Length: 340
Ligand code: KG4
Ligand code: ZN
Image 1 (tube, rainbow, N blue to C red):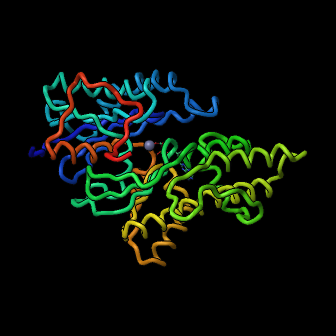
Image 2 (cartoon, rainbow, N blue to C red):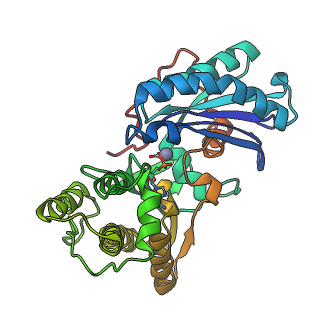
């Protein structure tokens, strides 16, 4: 299929309502994100029904704003794509249903896009070639190492058995009394802390293991805090944040090294919200310098959940001739691998 007309993308898998429009092959016309994170902060985490209701309020005005900013009429659009999974079912339903409605109303193709594929391709956003590489995807819901042969050809090498890295950041931040979302707070606090002061466990480090487990680490921070009589002062808090963060980073970096060596890959792509973590970025950059590997991160505005990455992943599949039925369902547990 030859695609030149603009592609509209909708993302609503969690607490961001996002709409982007790209003109294939390589022009981003608009990338809008309406975050609800303040709304969920008082609950200490995302409440699916609250997210869903707010997507519903936001999506239509955001659609009209996106068209206005891109200086397009609805009839200029060539296709509509939307995140259909994985994610929170009530939240996914809003974006995917809206997208199907637009596609049906305009008589243009609709395509269901996998959120993880959006993240995974985001370090190569709008590049003409997706190189063969190792992908480290570290988000609030997922932590996985994937061998990417080309767009659409993915082989899972390792993933978390329990909590995702971002989830561990958020849960430990909560234990430390930091506001939601906690990942960025730990990152900030850790910058003034001593990462060697406290020793927390690094799980599944035996030779050849490419999987992750972060729930024991989180529990270990909880026990540490429970055994103490006093609430940590600000310097202890910074040392705790830095020591916890160091434990997560060491595991992520070591498994990335192993996977790349085992698979003979010399190009690394890092994606998902935790890719914003400054210490993780520095450690991965140091690893790649040492091994003379290439490393790619997404642009800052494409690190957290956004619709531009969904548009890009969707574009690859539309060009390959894929299309979804407007009667297709959302898939809250959708995986992208042929061998799981
Ligand atoms: O990719 P993302 O925006 O949403 C999901 O698909 O899950 O990732 C969100 C996760 C949250 O857990 C958040 O705390 C974490 O990414 N995060 C960070 C940082 N910025 C966001 N974790 C550590 N350091 C950061 N600077
Ligand atoms: Zn995400």
